[in-house]
Length: 170
Image (cartoon, rainbow, N blue to C red; front, side, top):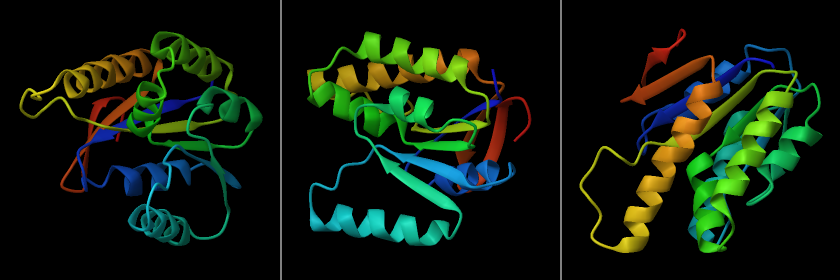
């Protein structure tokens, strides 16, 4: 199995910028697996801005559900998956089997032969959500991140643009 890095953080914590820089440590071209869906103009603008900021050398694959398949298709390219919690939202709202999807993700990570960086939003540090769907999302996100952290050589938490190593080096 190749090196796996899990990068967690809150909104605007610097996690995506750190993950892109970490992915660039390996020789390109790099594959960016994007899980976001552009449901409105504001989100389309965000996606376009992120794509332009990455610059040359990146191939973007948009997949709201099949992250394991996209990892397999990447072959020997270094990969950045951004973001696991958006992927989880897609699975949850699409009424997909989250346990099965997580198992498929872990199996795909075990087969990787190139560096893989995965980004997730840490949502478990705030208040307890007031509704059942939001509580389920928070709980599922925590379980997903724990599952990936078990197989990752590096786990990094970003706060205010500062990467802090939880396992391995930042």
